[in-house]
Image 1 (cartoon, rainbow, N blue to C red):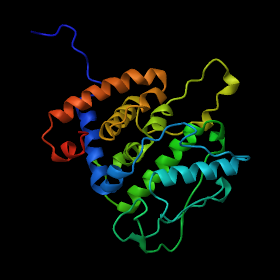
Image 2 (image 1 turned 180 degrees about the horizontal axis):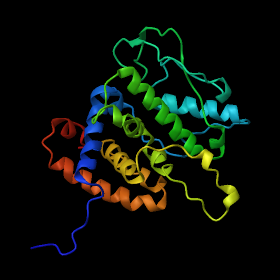
Image 3 (image 1 turned 90 degrees about the vertical axis):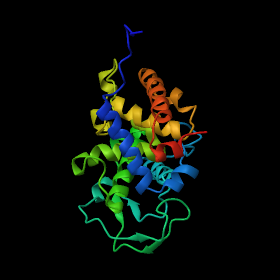
Length: 257
């Protein structure tokens, strides 16, 4: 029988395939063992961010440390500096023994200088933007260090960094901060606090749903903005069918049992 009202896929086939290929790229190059054993789906909750702070600088520092550690990058030579202290820098060369993330990661060739990153003070009142911005920055650092271009090549580096941030476990906040509604109070809306997203809401939600599927996540949906939850549910359904019908051994290997 023909379906008169066949549901339209969430994404075009080529767009969906790029996200799947990017997931495979991430697994192959950014420590699959850490992803399997330690990556969490990080939520905007007090359980994941329990710190109390008394200043902008303290908040930025504590959020950065949380994001860095959840990403498994506590051994990386990365230093958070104040915005006015951030200067152009050459990305340093350094090498790890084997694992690049987690407690097992160990620098065997130290860098000549640290990688300095900073924060947007306007995001202090929008902590999800702050978390997502740090996650995107760390993803960019990972890509620069590993030196393997994502599917599509260098033109897709910004989009790949957003996707990799989801792979690191920050898909909820990456999805929630793609677009900020102005709301009814114009004085409450600060466009300078919004992060600069490179993937659309739908693409980010799909990538988050992909990571959630492989991490057997059942709780993150309720932490998405209400208008994103139906997209997430649809993405979950499409991903489950896609993986079950896939011949790709990597996708099958990471599928939940």
